[in-house]
Image (cartoon, rainbow, N blue to C red):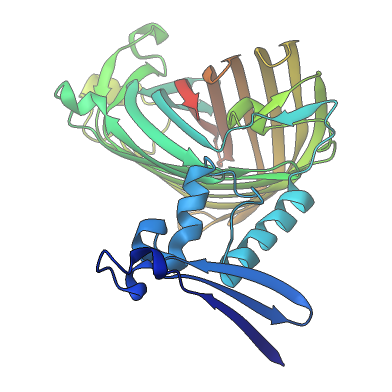
Length: 386
C-alpha cells in the first residue's frame, strides 16, 4: 500500500509587491512513504537546470569520474540491477589476494600500439631435405580506448602505405579476469611470402625468392583457467588493469580450437627450382580442424612493485585433428600445438608502456613429411589511465 504525504509550502508574500506570481517562486517538497522507507524528492521550478530529471543519475556518474559504486549516484531500478549483476560477477570472477594483486584505481585506458608480425612455414621430408618459407614482415599501427572490460580500437595496415599489395586481414579479441582468460583471433594472408630454403636448390643455400602462390586462413579460440588465480594476475601483464605486487605464478589448463586452411602452389616456379623440389607433389592444400586440451604454466616476476613486471606463459596442447581433404587416406590424426606469451611492462603513475610477444605453432603430419607453421607477433604499446 502506497501512502503519500505532501507538504506544499508557497512563499509568495516576499514578491507580492514586485508583481511576481506565487507560482513562479514555488518550492515543493514531497515525502513518499512505502513499506516504512522514506525517499525525499525535491523538485525545483526549472527541472532542466537541475540536470534533467530521470537521467540525473547519468550526470552523477560523470561527475563521480565513472566510479560506478559511488553511493551518491541515484540509479534507477534497471541500472541498479545491472550494477548488482556486475558487482556479483566482479566478486565471483575477478577477486584477488590484496597482498599480491590490486587494482590500478582507474576505469579508463587509452593506448597506441604497433604490431610487428610474420608467419613461418617449414616442411621436413623423409629424405631429410627441408623447405622453408616465411611471410614478409607486417607492420600495423593503431589505438584503442577501454572502459573497464569494454574496448574499442582500430588498426592501420602500414605496409599498404609503402605500396605492398599483399592481401591480409587480422582480427583479435581477448577477455581476461582473475579466474580465466579467453582469446579469439582470425588471420588471412594471400601472397607476400619469401622462399628461404628449397631442398637442395643452389646446394641448399639461403634464398630470398618472392613467392605469391600461397593462401592462408586461420581461426583460433583459446579459453584457459588459472589455478592460482588469487595471487597471479594475467591482466597485470596484458591488460594493464591490475598491479602485481609480489611475484607469483599459476598452472594453466584450458581448451583450444583451431580452424586452419593453407594452400601452396609451386607450379609457377622456374624449372630449375621445380627440379629441386623435395617431393613429386607440387600443390599442398592443408584443411584442418583441431580440438585440443592445453596445459601449461604462467609466471609474473615483479622487479619493482607497481613499476616493473615481466611475464612468461607457455602452453603446449594435444588433442584431435580432423582433415576434410578427400585426397588424404588419414582423416583423423593427433594434434600437437604450442602457444607462448611474454611481456615486459613499465608503469609510472597514470602512464604505462609494454613490449609483448606471442607465438603460435602448429604441427601437421603427412605421408612423407612433417609440416610446421607458426605466427609470431611483437607489440609495443604506450598508454594512459584516467
